[in-house]
Length: 75
Image 1 (tube, rainbow, N blue to C red):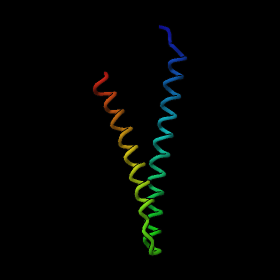
Image 2: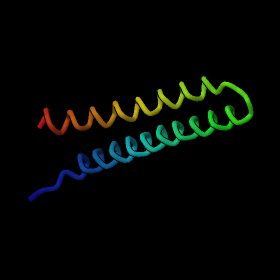
Image 3: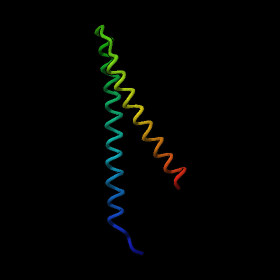
Image 4: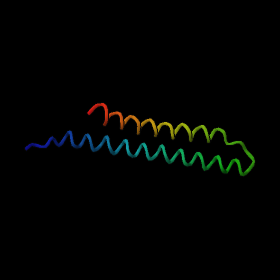
């Protein structure tokens, strides 16, 4: 049995990058919601923060849906 170490390293690198990217997106979404709450408490609107948070959460959901698509349909 021969292990293709280059392919294994490539899969590990892509998995690590996507995981860090998704965590960063989710963190930005959570920070956006927090900024909106602070803006509302101070009497501001907070619309831009809410829009940014929604975009981040939508990107996270799209990435998860694409991963499920790859597992279910492409396998």
